[in-house]
Length: 598
Image 1 (cartoon, rainbow, N blue to C red):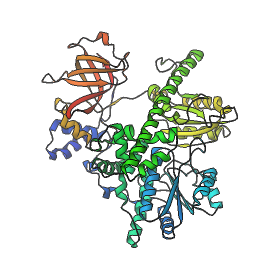
Image 2: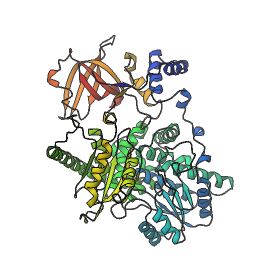
Image 3: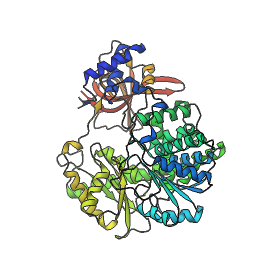
Image 4: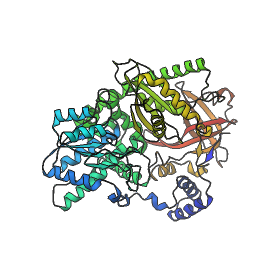
């Protein structure tokens, strides 16, 4: 049997929620399922399922907001040149597009600049200030999704007489740069009710309050809520924690896209993916749209992604979406090559040092820190994420900051991905505090971070990070498999699956339901030598219920097919429910996460 942990054991809370749900006429057994799911996510009142814009956190606690709004209001009135400085990921792209769209609607003179990651690196640096001055001669610089650690960049802009407004969401333990205004729910002294806003969420609050004061003053304004499609996309793409506030933002953005009330660039990207807007889910933001936009910043220039989101005509949007799709295919090829090289490198290291990986728990690896001269800087984050998932340890992948400069004195850039229980940014900060000459600069969040070090420091950093990981309790590195429990036969119904999918916004911090159960294997097939498809019947089903189940990228060692006797063998399965639609036909499908022959 699989070793599973119930997501909740609070029977009192489950009973209370079940009572609250009882009035909607739903099957009593299914009410119990829903109550158990909600309790496992910390919900104690079903009112939390009602996602109304009026329930958004009030902006009053957002430190620096009033000053930022006043500066932008004056800049529009005086027709000052505003320059948006963004980031080269999807959150940065949506933040930039949102700022540009809304400010233009208000009558502002505005343009944008996103650093080329391969030339300038991340954030508002002195070099980006100089580039901005040369190209746009700005009176005001507004950062989105960056800036909270841009001390030198802010100083360079101020020295030129440029006003600077920072809007960001990244973590910091230091005082903010000396900008004219800083809006960041995670800055010191900010009491805003949600620390989970991503960059585009912060931009939404700034613009929403700007629109409010301009409307009250009878000035040209904008309906910022019309652009929640961008806010929803950026929030999910940046893996923002889906607290109640973020679920509201994503819900309304998702509804707008499903109804076709969104920027044509999003519709064009969906066309490239072969998806219809009306069938979009929140998870699709992260798996379908965001990778195509991110591909621009990873492989070429994020301006392509932003221009796609800013496009107002279908032909332009289609052309740019096609370009982004091609870049994403290129990204996949590079990623596959790098992942194979990383696996080969890990195997070589294991043989040389006799340090086991997760397949041999006697001396488990606590971290994966890798570098190669020919690795692609734009893809290291994805590879780090894949390795973290495969080995369940923090992974940091480095690549040259400049492909033409790979000597020991040159810089290399790392992208880190972590597991639950290990705050990766704080871990890197601890190394920076104890060995200040090791790391040039860093930043990030609990689960993801970036850093730059001299190449000559790679071995020392790797040793320091691994030593830090070995000081942590070993149980942190044991993957916990959570289950929302077993399902009654009535739950294996397309109507219930659709109800569950639309119950709320599922994602990071509000995990989609995962169930487990024991099934009899009726049939099994291997697809494309990588996937396993099974037909399963619940052992407690009162009827002969046949359910399709799919296990993508199956671990064939975990399920020995030669030992399966169809109609007899039983398996314990951890799975998600899916509404599998093909040619207009809907079927319940189990998406297998783990499986064990019993």
